[in-house]
Image: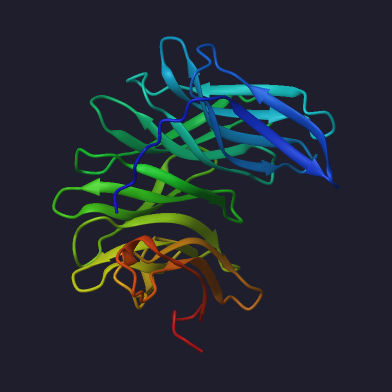
Length: 299
């Protein structure tokens, strides 16, 4: 299942709700004011709101955009617009804030050629100045994209998504990046048995610093399977992998992952059900699973 970039025409609107009424609403436009969209949001320790996505600007098209607005009033505090070297399609997909209040953002930027690179950016929480940018490129020529980001106890960023690599297509990719410098600490690329489209959409860190990622892996006999992977926080080595195949013929995909107080893993997404309908691949069942944190096994 290849990711398709949507062309959305409209404006980027950031909305927060308290009780049953709007406390405030913020609409942000780029200089071209054509296709703008917010994709992620979080709140810092002071209660201010940080949202990410893209804005459309003259001369650079879609730009990877981060904005902080005051939690009390919605007034814009700062905006960071990040442009890849190709100045075409740059998108922020996920955001988190570290213990110092700085902002970590994951997404993709377009460099030379038509493809995009998996990117993690750190900007200063005080003023939005870019501190560093880590660009992760697969060995192939297609799109590499980051879709989720978190921060571990040491302040390092951990991002998940996919890279395209020669001989294996799109591979589930998790990368740890040093919080102080943006240097790549390690990268894990996971290829399913069918060597096709393997993608991660969520990432979390457990109490001992190991990393959980969730998404879909391609299998030769079952198609795309709902997949959760645990990797060692120290070096990115795979600890375990658990896959779930629905009863139907469609793709099964995990979209979210977290860890409970005992270290066990919860993942949510969808599986394809058995269906008498003519188009069973168009159906999906809301699915949540729990796995042992130690080995990924069932209880």
